[in-house]
Image 1 (cartoon, rainbow, N blue to C red):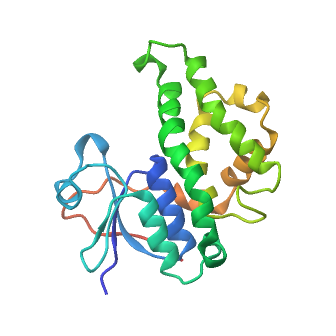
Image 2 (cartoon, rainbow, N blue to C red):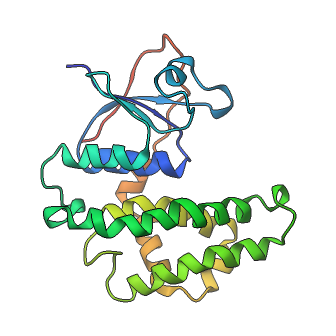
Length: 216
């Protein structure tokens, strides 16, 4: 059986969440690392919107939303722990996912690249993002992970974005009033999961020898 094909970009948080689920589900794929300024024609043909990740299944079906890739990967292995009992974690994760991928992501982009959004100071955008950080801190004050005592699909989906936010100004983040959030992020940064998620691969070009991203 041919492997699924994953178009990815190493540092993209959406692609990172997709790769996390593939690793957690022990699914191997043919990985095609994309140069965003020179997107391959094969990827654009499969998904004209032109953003990563894009997963092409052996039957030809295309999944081009990171959340859909996560669900496909985790569901392919039966009752995966990240999904929770009767997939309760999926429903509980959706409000956090919606806020992360909309208002928080907009604040993150502006905080990370303030020169592109000069109508406000960088601290303004950081404070917008902090509204979400405070919400997560409340969750993490109850348990070490967002939805309980173990990692779930919610943690895997959000951590790549919080990692980016923290990296904009590490000194500020180290002293910010979010101790539980820092512990949660530190555990992720030091994990074997992130080490595998961030494995480096050369940029893909048509005709290259396939690179297998091993999920097991």
